[in-house]
Length: 325
Ligand code: PEP
Ligand code: MG
Image: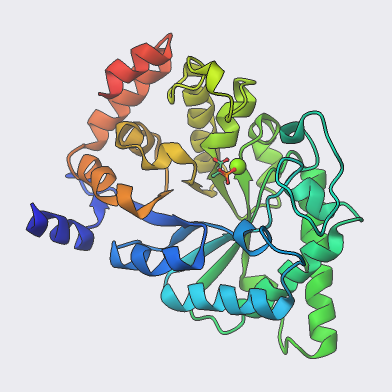
C-alpha cells in the first residue's frame, strides 16, 4: 500500500486512452508549499493570499509580500503558480481596515470589489507591486487570478490598474522591463454573473478557474456557512453541475484554459465528470491527489463522456450521487 502511494506520486493523471489533466495544489499558508511539492503537485492552482493580511495590526508591506511570493515560486521552480489576489470582505475582521458593517457580507464589498474601491485601493496596489516584482526572476511561471469578478467593467478596471502599477514600477526603476506581456491574468468563475458573461470576459481574461464553493452558494442562493441548509449543500446539485458544464464547454470554444480550484476539484466522485467535460486542471488539497489520480487513470474518455450525459440529465443531487458512486 505504502509502495503504491509512493508510485502514485510520480504518476500523471492520464486516462488509459491518453488524456492528461494537470493536478495542482491549493495552498493558503507558506508552510503548505513544501508538503504539496512532496506529494507530487504539478503546480499551484490556487494560492490564497488572505493569510498575509489577516490576524495582524497593519497591512503587510511590499517587501514582506515579495518575500512570501518568492518563497513559493522557488518551491515550485519550473511550474505554474496561480496567485489569487486578496479576497476579503465584510465577514472577516481586519482591524486595520475599518470595513463597513453590512447585513449580507457575502453579497457585499468583497474580493475584487473591495480591492478596486478607492478607500482600499492602496492595499491592492501594494499587493500588485509585490506580485509584479515577484514575476520578474521567472523562476516559476506566475499567473495572477482575480476573485469575485462579475463583469467586464470590473475586469477592465483591474487590468488598467495593474498596467498603471507596472508603469509606476518601471518609472521608479524597480522594474527594468515590462512583465505584463508574458504574465497571464485570469479570473475566478464563482459568480453566476461571470458565467453568463464568459464570452465577453474571455476578451480580457487569459484563463479561468472555477470556484465551486462560491459558485454553488450563489447559484443556489444558499449560504455556504449555514449548516441548516444541508439539502442544498449536497455537493452535486443539478444546477451546479449544469453550470460547470456550461463553463467548461464555453471556455473550450473560446480557447481559454480552464481549471477548477473549489472543493469539488478534490472530490474523486466528480473527477470522471470533469474529465469528460475537458477541464485542463484540477487544483486541490495535497491529501486528495492520489484518490483523484486513481479515478482518472482508470476512466476512459468515452466512459467519462457518458457520465457527463447522465449527470446533466439527472433531476436531483441524490440521483447524481448515485451516478457518480
Ligand atoms: C471557491 O469559492 O470555490 C474558492 C476556491 O475560493 P474560496 O473558497 O477561497 O472562496
Ligand atoms: Mg471563492
